[in-house]
Length: 65
Image (cartoon, rainbow, N blue to C red):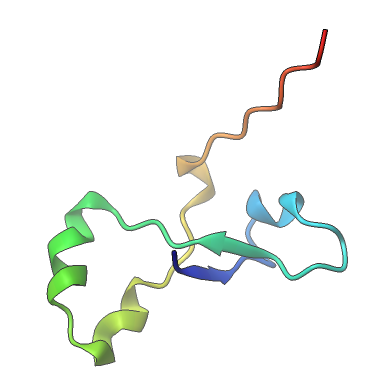
């Protein structure tokens, strides 16, 4: 699992303690699968980008009865 900094991500920065490093997993778009698998090492950082916040859905944990 690859992670990147999420300090400035509008959604993921809310899921860590205030003093903890903010991280999020790298999510590849399906269109990037083949490019990722075939990419030389020099191009690997091109795929290390934050997922757009509009593509994420946050759901709260159900309250215990």
